[in-house]
Length: 133
Image (cartoon, rainbow, N blue to C red; front, side):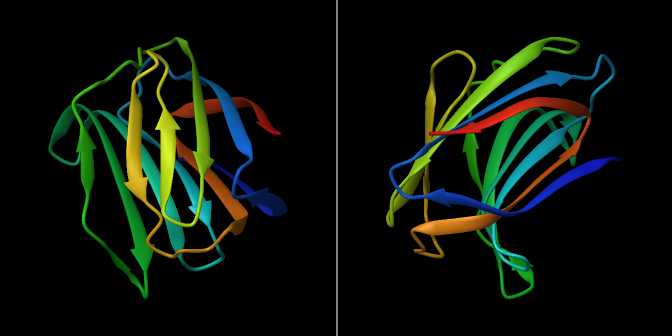
């Protein structure tokens, strides 16, 4: 499993992050993580067939060395071997994650910060572009 780690890239409340990637043809899952070095404010994990889930998007946060309560979305607009675009915005209260079909997952900003500098992309995907505006 390869990972792309981006440090010291500022993503502030009110900005929009657009992530474009290509899902591997034999993908089981991949993850988009936004937060700090140790804590993850937003973990977006599309699961094709992983961790006992099939065709499910799981969002979570990681604080103090442990995972918190999962939020699951019934929409699964990702396809094996196809390009995808995920658009993320946030404020001090919540993240809004727009999936490729336009559906939006709302996830609480449990850390409550208005700036994150650490991003990690891992799993069965190839990230093609990350844009913050």
